[in-house]
Structure formats: C-alpha cells, structure tokens
Image (cartoon, rainbow, N blue to C red; front, side, top):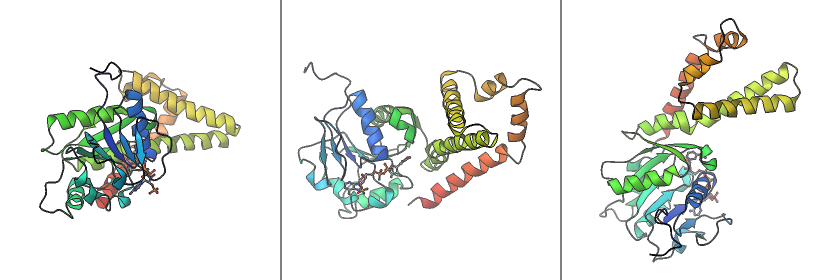
Length: 277
Ligand SMILES: NC(=O)c1ccc[n+]([C@@H]2O[C@H](COP(=O)([O-])OP(=O)(O)OC[C@H]3O[C@@H](n4cnc5c(N)ncnc54)[C@H](OP(=O)(O)O)[C@@H]3O)[C@@H](O)[C@H]2O)c1
C-alpha cells in the first residue's frame, strides 16, 4: 500500500467544465482529497498537479479511466460533447449538474452517433453556489439502473461541497431547483432590500451594508447550528408587543410573504419544467 495515498481519497474524475460551479466542486474535492483527475476546460489555469487540465475532450489521455464524469458546462454547450462520452474508458458513471437537461435527453445525445450502444448511467444533480465555500445544498436523482456503488460515489463527491439529498422521481429536481438551486438569490435579494431600507431610514450606506449582510449570514449560521425549527427561532426573538412582532405582522399578511414566497417558488419550478429537454 502506498503510504502517501490515504485510503479514503476520492476516486479520479473527469470534470468537463470548470467554471463557477465545476470549479467550486473541484476545489471541494481537492480539499477533501481526490486521486489525480483530469479537467476539460478552455480557460482554467489554476488547478495544481497531480491534476491535469486539457482544453478539449480529444486531449483526455486514452489510458485515463475516471470513476465518474461530471458534466458542468452551460446547458446550451453540452450537445457537441455528448457523443464523445462513449469513448471514455472504464464505464464511468455520469453526473450532470446541468439545469434543465433530463437524463433521457442527455442519453439520446450520448447515443446519437452510436445508437446501438448502451448509454452510461446518468445521475442528475442540482447544486447551488454556496458549494464554493463547502456550504452547498445539492439535490440529486439517480435512476433505477444506478448501482449502490455509483450512488455512494455520487454522494461522496457531492458531499465534498456541502449537504446532499436524494429525490425521486426525476421531475423533483425542478422543485430542488426552485428551492435550493435558485434559493441563494432569494436570500441575496432580502439582503439588498434590508440594506436599501436601512439607507432610506438615514443610515450611512456602509453601516446599512454591514447590518444587512451580518444579519443574513448570522441568522443563517444560527439556523444551521440550531436543532430548533425556523419557526421556533423566529418565536424566540419575537416578544409580544415588541418591534419584531410589528415587522412580522407586515411580512405575514396573507397577501405578503406567505403568498409571494409560494408564488415565487412555483414560478421557478414551472420555469425549470418548461426548460427541461
Ligand atoms: N452557477 C450556478 O448557480 C449553478 C447552480 C446549479 C447548476 N448549475 C449548472 O452548472 C453548469 C455550469 O454553470 P457555470 O455557471 O459554472 O458555467 P461556466 O462558468 O460558463 O463554466 C463552464 C466552463 O466550461 C467551459 N466549456 C464549455 N464547453 C467546453 C468545451 N467543449 N470544451 C472545453 N471547455 C468548455 C466554458 O468555457 P466557455 O465559456 O469558453 O464556453 C467555461 O469555462 C450549468 O449547466 C448550470 O446549469 C449552475
């Protein structure tokens, strides 16, 4: 046994697309410890050895047998890549993080030039951008033909960038997209609006900014570390007749947050379903 190679090193992967999401995931894998892997990306320059960056799929060493291939290019750039995936050795499981691309659609693209072949097993995952700091939330769907080992591998890779949850059937990925995939943007919007409200009340912009940001990040960290429900944490800071109660009464009007949050999530999920191909 090689003493330089810890037993729990993640197996080698082929990452196709190392931009915002792929890069965040690969940084998580490097931090967790990953076997020498190959990245296909036109721009990336900051991945250290023993990993290797190539500029196109044709340059992937023929003797490289990854345990998994991670598809992380923009959805509109995947089609020319798909047929080449059958040439990768070792029958790797494919993990796609592409928004709106279904397993059926991806399989069809993979087999477009070799229709008589068997498409590799594809697992569909929806991460979010806090993955960049190891605080991601990823939902994934694995089809019935995925083996226990492939699912375990997928979970160990996704867990390197945060929490992982499995959903079923596949269309539930649209709900994951609407809640946790798009969710960080909802929270950032709240931070923006709080900051604007503080400025409107006369606070200096730099004070407004720090008050809003630290409130959101502190409340998020408390929620993360507390065993209590969000509703209990809210009640804990709401004294009867106090200031928080006054504000919450406005937010909680039936036509306000209870209706708007549901409407927003439903709109995102509907759009995800509409875009699915
Ligand atoms: N960002 C998010 O919040 C988020 C959340 C969940 C899922 N996703 C999914 O993650 C995927 C990637 O999104 P992203 O924001 O990380 O995209 P991105 O920043 O554009 O990264 C993709 C990278 O892949 C490169 N690339 C594309 N085709 C290539 C090819 N044939 N050969 C070599 N390099 C190629 C791109 O280069 P070029 O720019 O030159 O094409 C780019 O550097 C998307 O499918 C998205 O749906 C993103």
